[in-house]
Length: 305
Picture 1 (cartoon, helix red, strand yellow):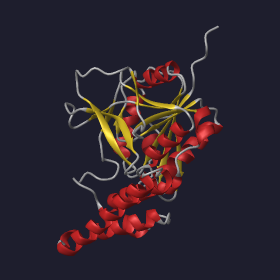
Picture 2 (cartoon, rainbow, N blue to C red):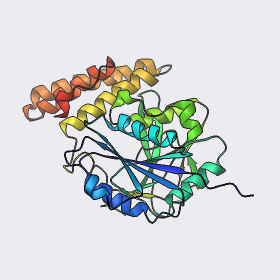
Picture 3 (cartoon, rainbow, N blue to C red):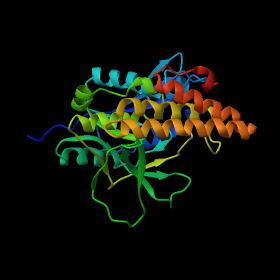
Picture 4 (cartoon, rainbow, N blue to C red):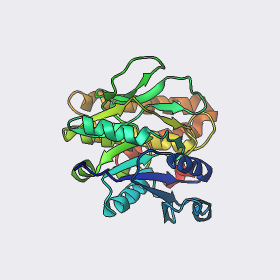
């Protein structure tokens, strides 16, 4: 008797990005994977998505009256899926388009890799399809940062490429791994939660990998704004998350070098804000973020407004 097909819960967080979410759901309808449970967690959007999602009766909509943050919103959706019996969780950005074979390829890569932990896929940028595909990242322990790994068209790669860090843009994890390691650390709110989970999964003895035989199309940045560069809110969350990563994951010599690099960047931000008044608000956001992250304080909603 052949093994039954696993149930995959696709978890999509929507926050004021309904048009992108609807496009993502349309692409999921073309998936060749038969047993999908699609859950949309609405994180306190201004517009109630219920009417628009009525066109997708296969989708479960869960709503929060406020923005809980990316990590917590994904976790609430994951808890619902696990309680319903899902075998795998697929965290998927709402600003993505899913090729028909993507989920099946990710499942196959997981099954073929002993000790598989998180599985990601190459990201093709929607507006720049010819740019190299981002596969995941290497962890830099001396700075507690990541270096993204890219694959250009025509460049050979293993079908299952081991990587330390998998992007949360499209991240598959089994029920067993989630139970053993946990879900996203909600202390991060948004940004870096995928790197943190990747390192925890590796520390538990698993192998993270990118299934390079497929890809996801990513409309990068659409969930947090379409303007170029970091907004005040993005800069605050990214830098706060960076400080949290140092506090959580610095080891060995990195306990000295990573904090040193962090505080040198804080000094540079202060000097930049002093000599360039137009950037003062951004630099104040960065300084506040580094202090809040270092002391593991909750997100200061002032910087998110």
